[in-house]
Length: 333
Image (cartoon, rainbow, N blue to C red):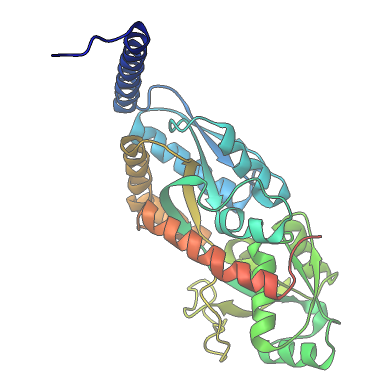
């Protein structure tokens, strides 16, 4: 014999039924939206100023992806605080694929270890796809009189803290890479942060600072013109545009891989089928022969791994470099 339901139970069952129906409709609406993605312009946030290396790459990518996806992609520069301003703006945006960012390793992996209050963690994002990596080169001012990496190390050891180096800002890879070089060679330098790579390079050219680690694209014309002296490419492979500049490995300097990558990210929780569409646009971009030629000119290396792989790399490098930052007291005060 069945038990008669009381009015309270009936009300509860009706409420649950309505909630379940609403959930089904919401999921269905989300899937329908994903299936039509994109049906309006996409915002591509660049956490750097216009004309920077990341900005140039983003604009090339936006043009290509727009054609592949059939929607306009609008580049939006949000520079400041070593990219924290631009990247943190993603956290307040819906995870629908219409707000994405071209992030660098400094912004997602290192900033949380350098700055006292970064409003995000490395895993607070959807990692859509890797885009490109870049090599670094160590340059010194002509005024220093230094011609080789051995001379640079010898002088720095003789006068600890006397030699200075510029960077694009505290926590930027141009800062941390030089600190890693100093740690591996047992030298002590004085850091002079600038507001960007261009003014830091100007500081080296004028002799205001002795040295700088720079992405190759920023330093190449100054090296070619003889305005600065290139001592080493930081890595295991020489660069075709600088065939006479030896690598750090050739000069018996054991450095870990210098991460200089860019990746497309978005707010956490973007549906898989929207991620796949965006990844399709990135893949079409990096596999385009015209893109590869342009990246060669910018000394960028197209990356063709997956979003999951670049997320794993971002997490691993956050751990590795975070320890280095803490152990060497490189936090911003």
